[in-house]
Length: 434
Image (cartoon, rainbow, N blue to C red):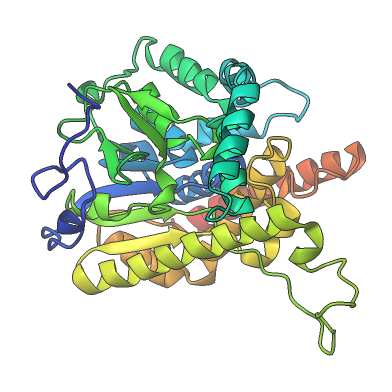
């Protein structure tokens, strides 16, 4: 039965065992294309939408949905499942960047439903758990410590503050509509959604052999079950948690599918706060800016980011060394921009500015080394075109949502003027050549 525990090994492509992880990659097919959407919470999903929309606008005569393989981890699982079902980044971008006061499909995901049933159940056991812990501490007082008592009382905490059944329900309803599918086996594309088996610590790639009978919506929910925040998702008697616990991207899954070009969008990078020259940063200094002034959650968030990003960098160096014929292009936010745009990974209110920041910064990255990107994409049958006024107008139109209506109307007028001038210039050039 799909979802049941299987022994890891090279013959089990659905698991990332140590044996499978170090097998040589198969020879890549230059025309086989992949998109890997990494984890990064709610804000990470917004960033991925903006980055992919920018990339798609710069590719000629092809959509991201025309790619062959889609790999999703955590929030990236949600994006990858939609892409594999034919939803273009442009459609997602328009949904995200609607007016902040307008309800969008993202608001219907119900991401923060309290895990009330489990919380109530555990609260009813408080007297018994406390008595058992106190009695055990008393009996073994010569050997146990206060931390042992705290650990015993930890059983009162639920497995997660929230559950993400709302996400699963929304995905199921959406994927069962005509023209879409909630079945990995009926997709015309290869889709891999990664989660981690809580009891064994092994990764599972839903959609692979032996794990393709699980509904896509259920796999998305499992991959998005952030430990502590969401309770684990049970599938076939196995509890699954966020796929980013092991790796933030799982690019190797695309390489094992013989992809010659893999586009990875990774929104999770360490925050970078520059220290002014001569500033004293030890105890007693002004700590308005440093991360430690924001308390333990911010420190742990930075540790989490540093750990996952270092794993990604290590993986990239290994993949490029062991599979030099495959190209991997990574799009990430600039670390120094995070405090302004993507500090809290679960914040939904900043979707417009995050998606538009991702769009603008991806456009800027492509322009910063355009010839290089053009050559890389050309190797795989893709044409990357230079930026034009249409791209610039779209990128600048909502660059500052804090501006008033007059400024917005002025930006719109300037964008239209730029586009009109470009069209006139093209017509004039055509007449001159003729």
